[in-house]
Amino acid sequence: MSTIKESAQTMIKRIIAENMPEESVINALKNHDFDGKKIYLIAIGKAAWTMAKAATDYLGDRIEKGVVITKYDHSMGDIPHLDIFEAGHPTPDENTVIATEKALELVSQLTINDEVLFLVSGGGSALFEAPQDGIALEELAKLNNDMLASGADIVEINMIRKRLSKVKAGRFAGQCLPAKVFAVVLSDVLGDRLDTIASGPAAPDQSTGDDAMAVVAKYGLILTEKQKEYLTQETPKELDNVKAVVTGSVRSLCDSASKAAQALGFKPYVLMTTLNCEASEAGRFLSSIAACTMAGMSHFTRPCAIIAGGETVVNLKGDGLGGRNQELALSAATGIAGLEDITIFSLGSDGTDGPTDAAGGIVDGQTVSKLKETGHDIVQILANNDAYHGLRAVDGLIMTGPTGTNVNDVSIILCK
Image 1: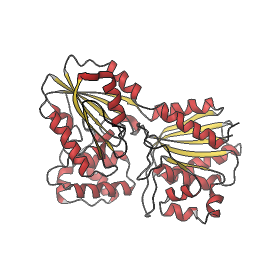
Image 2: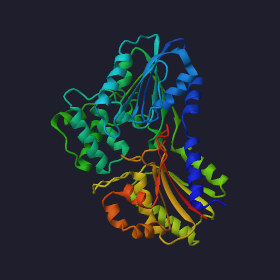
Image 3: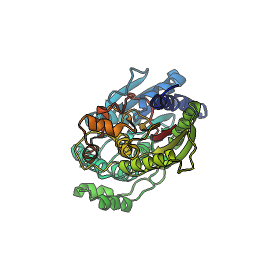
Image 4: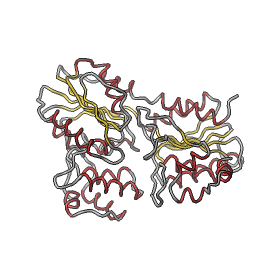
């Protein structure tokens, strides 16, 4: 019989395998008629290479040419007809701008007889960027880092990003005119809001300038006068050349987790698909549920898997290394300290959590004592936002490498 930690590792592999985007991309293409038009492919995001490869395998030489922009180390080789670029994430860099310019050059000469196949996945906000006139890349990167450290959620962050960009908030679709755009979208955003996923390059913007300024005030963000000027300018509210389909989301991630748990003998319970709070708070919340379940004081029947999908945030106060899933997992360790037959893990489906090479973290009832044995104080580790080094000291990092998909995060309690 496998250990509970081995069961967790089995679940992780199956969850990722079932949420690769190839099948969903091909299904979207089967249901779309390009009506004999020439096809030009633009793919952006952490899953851009995988999505582009699937589309090229299906469409073959019908694709005239294209541009793929993904995160460093996320490309897996050449693809016929396509120029592939790797760039910075979560902060845009010079390669981001260079790659985006190549995409804009490609679509700038299109006609009514052409169509853009636009493949979108999470991470596109940083990887697809052309700053507004008068906005330097360096100041955009600084503001991006300030927002990520503030604890703002992705919807709030993207309200700001899209107004400082020539390609976000539907503006990319505008630059494709008179060509049509068929957008196939892999969602990493709660609620699958098309105007928020990758900051909506081909989606009408639901937010207003007033909404953006409210985010600035809420988090005390410091903006230049030029940035404030762009924030008050309205974004496109209608687009008539775009058809979009969402092909994957956190709901499918949780469904896969349920199936994997059941196959291993755990009764699955999907607690929510909208987890959206501080990572440390989520960890404490899940550990409380776990402790109550082990004590027979909950409605969950053991052995069970309690599943929460979504995306937490980290309000950076220290200078350590980590990511939201690692911080969630380590924060949960204290609440289950000393308990047997219990494991909690949190996983980013893209295989990278924050600016680290880990996909997330996994803890059990012995994690806290193991940390003490190695001379680490869990309170200090969390205060310094240094979950990566804390988990590494107790073999608690989940290492998958880049997965080729990106449909948000899942956190799971396993109780025997």
